[in-house]
Structure formats: structure tokens, C-alpha cells
Amino acid sequence: MQAFLDAFTAALRLVASGDQDLIRIILLSLKVSLSAVCIAALIGIPLGGLIALSRFPGRQALIVMFNALMGLPPVVVGLMVYVVLSRSGPFGVLNLLFTPTAMIIAQVILVLPIIVSLTRQTLHSLWLEYRETLQSVAATPAQCLAAVLWDGRFMLITAILVGLGRAIAEVGAVMIVGGNIDNVTRVMTTAIALEASKGDLALALGLGFILLMISMALNILAHGLTAFGEPERRS
Image 1 (cartoon, rainbow, N blue to C red):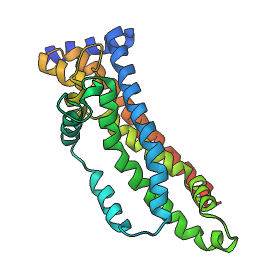
Image 2 (image 1 turned 60 degrees about the vertical axis):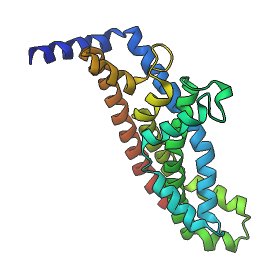
Image 3 (image 1 turned 180 degrees about the horizontal axis):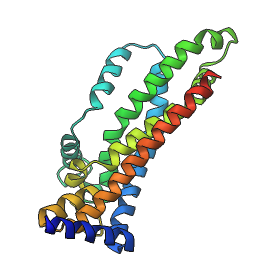
Image 4 (image 1 turned 180 degrees about the vertical axis):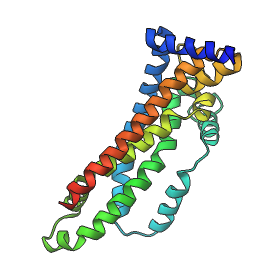
């Protein structure tokens, strides 16, 4: 018990003092996760909108596929990206394995189905609500998409925050493709796993505090945006 209290106190000191190792790991985590979520959002929101507002062969199969991929095991994604980026893989010549870029690629694959599925659900509901009105004024498909995107903007931001929460808390895929290399690819989740296995509970707990605070902040922000956006949309 005393050992845990000592580690807990040391962790608080690390966080309060702005330890350089701690800050470096946090900044890399944010860089990788934010980059991955931005890329996934740029691809996923238009794709989700297209699926929501269009009718085409295989649409239902696509919806089922993206819904299923929301629970994609991170270690499987990590393994797939590792094989593709390894020296014997098709993209091995790019030498991306064990770099932050490889970690971003893995996180994009994990986050993209979440953003596509949540975007589709949001925009499909809005499209059913506004379809007759938009069609009555002869709105073009681009105008219809723009209208529902704007009306559902707060819920779409919530979808992005959900994706960010998934990305920043992920450990399996980034461990495989990043290698957990100090000062290169070590992020919060992989550092926690490593330091805990080494018995360095102070740094592990310090990073755990930060990760927990980020996760709580994302959840509070998502809840606030949803609560704020719903009355505005109805008005």
C-alpha cells in the first residue's frame, strides 16, 4: 500500500512539474491521434453523407460493413498495416514502419468506420425530416447535402470526438506498427503499458491521469455539443 501511495505522489509531482518526458509523450499522442481523426473526418463525413442521401446497388451491404467495422479489433488492424508496410509488403519501399505515419494510418483505419457510420445515421435522420421540403424547392443534391450537414453540424462534431476518443486510447495497433520507440513512436497508451511492466508506476500513473482527463473532457464536450445542438436544430 505504501508503495502505491509513493507512486501516486510521484505521479502527481511529475504532472505538476511538467516533466519533459511526460510532455513529449503527450504531444506525440495528440499529434498522431488528431492527424488520424482529421484525415478520417475528411474522408468519412462526405462518404457517410453520400451513403445517407443516395440510393445505389450494394448500399445496404456497405452500411452493414461499416457498422461491423466499428468494432474492428485494433491488433488485427495493426497486423494488417504491419504486413503492408513491412519490407516484404507492397509499400515496404516507403520505409514507414515504426514511424508516426504508420501509427496515423492504423488509427485512420480504426476511426474511419466510426465516423462514416455515425455520420450516415445522423444525416439519414435529417434527410428523412427535410427531404420533402428540399425537394419542393428543387434543391440540387449538393445543396441537399450542404443543408443536412449544416443542420447536423453539432452531432457530426460529436461523431468526430467519439473517433478521437477511440484513437487516443488505442494501444494494440500503434504498438505493433510503431514499435514503442522512445522519442520516436512512444505515445501515452504504449508508454503506460511499458512503464507498468517495468514497475515504474509513477510515470505510468502520471500518463494515466492525463489520458483519463482527456477522455473525460472529450465525453463532456460531446455531451455538451449534443445538448446544445438539439434545441437549436428544433428551433
